Length: 88
Image (cartoon, rainbow, N blue to C red; front, side):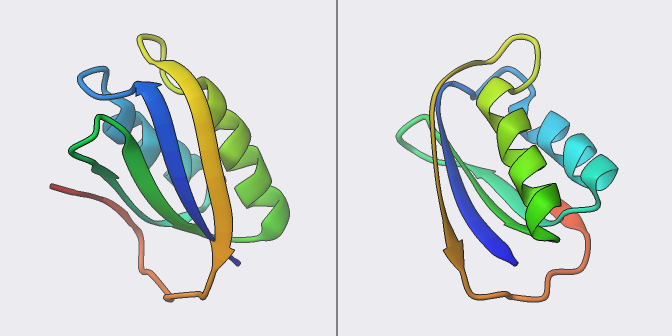
């Protein structure tokens, strides 16, 4: 299953992407994470449905210094990612 996730709030400059990689590896989720120009973070994530749901719950909290105000996500077509990485 594939989710496109966008996280809003104070999510840049707080190690959100690095922690997303760590949590994705912990949850065995593959895909990528990237900062957007509007200050949000976008994530493409693939894994089992229940695992992705748990990953989204983590995204709603984020790392310690993040202040997440909104998370929007939707299903998309699988892209068969290998691993999880930061896109710059």
